Length: 306
Image (cartoon, rainbow, N blue to C red):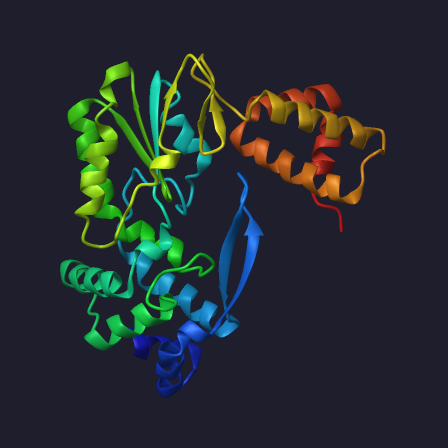
């Protein structure tokens, strides 16, 4: 069903589609980008044809499968602000991180998952469809950073994990969200999170659709008494969300330089990105900038010039 539908919509012969699937691992270009906290991250970018098919499969198949309400990444209408807001009213937060998240999902995991979900949701996937899909979205039998299919596929494959975590949170009176490979659990009691790393590790180790491993070096217990950062946003002591004082100072300085025409092209592009970002995640600060520098200045910064 899936291969035939792709053939009809793309016009590509079925034989060509099968060959592309079998040779998918060789159709990537790899490069490195710096991580925010230091080091390098390797990106594997698929060829144009492969990327197009990955996006088509994401729309045709993965969107038909459920994503848990606790998932805040790669979901339309939900993002880092909503993820942080879920924890803003709590006093204590535990942050956990999965190591090598995308490669934790193997081609065998994907095939098992699609077989089970096809039966559950009457998707009508043949074994041929499942094998074709698993090869198209994998690079050397694993998911990879850079393929557009990896984020939506991991979101649907993590549904049962998220449900287990949400149930654990309900029984302990906690708040649970997941933003890609970052897990957040919050409580109003200081001792209510102590046993969570071990419990989450047990759930992760037993999960059938991925070889999930916690990165213990990134485990962090955060308190309302100190700065709590959730997906890059600061949870303030009065229960609000902020981008943080240092980032605000940087943005204010850049806006001031912009009004004085003392800003270079690289700084201007960074400033435009910041202003668009804070409009969504910190509207109070966006309003304060507008009030101080005028709506025309901020409007110019939110509309990229030709």
